[in-house]
Length: 106
Image (tube, rainbow, N blue to C red; front, top):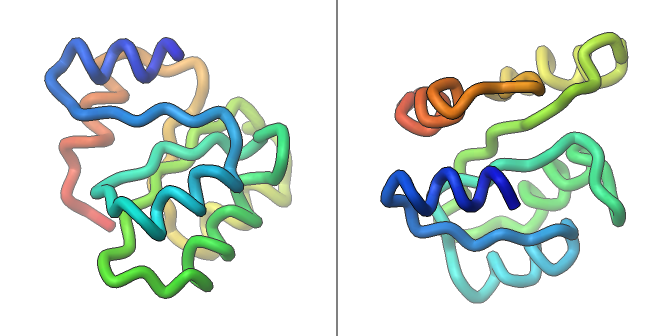
């Protein structure tokens, strides 16, 4: 909710979702430019979300930025390195969030 409010106040159009499955379903109907995805979610982890997002074969796949506080987990770190995903490490500042979104790198 905090990220949604920060981005809305900064002029972004934001759709906040708490669960991964409804987000994946929504993407099939309404494309988006960027997804901020937590590595730990109630219904699936960010790694599974990443793979399901790519399996969906969307016309315009969104950029994925991973948010995590799981900095000492080797599995998480291996995943982030393997797929070269941008990451916001919790806790992050408003400026770090905005900088991550402003970066054009995939």
